[in-house]
Length: 226
Image (cartoon, rainbow, N blue to C red):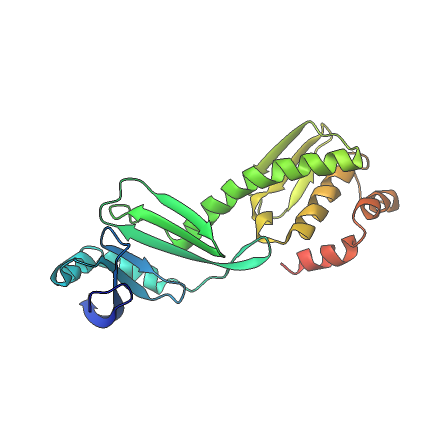
């Protein structure tokens, strides 16, 4: 059964709890690794010549991490308006974390000695990284289109706001905006850029917003639902 797509369903007892897992051989795998897949199931991936007798010992070594992550509720993750899967692989021989995003799947390979990261942690770190790459460039583009100039941009976590604008021309944006489709992100950016001219929500302010974002009412309603 040691071919590129062979799978075996197995069970193991972890702290008096029966855990089902899938044992899968892969020609491309270089090392033994664990992952909790998008369906919140444990999968063990082995190189084609790996001795399966060692698998249970490896699982037992990682039992605390496995039980912790299997208890986690299945959370929906979004990037630019589309739902994505977040998969964590623990690699026995990996020296430093690796991250890859492709086809709506965020895959993170982590050295097996690091057990503290959850799907939420990985998603939050990655989303903040993507925000710092995407938002400054898009803010600059929209600033040029509106002719509203700012002094400084800050990307950070905000509990109650998607964005803010100070009288000194400093713009601040919530990195979680990256969860939404680009049209909503543009609306929030334009909203804050317009505050550079009107530091209130007067009719004049909304006239500015409507000039550069024609569907702002619809986008504003959609944003409030989240």
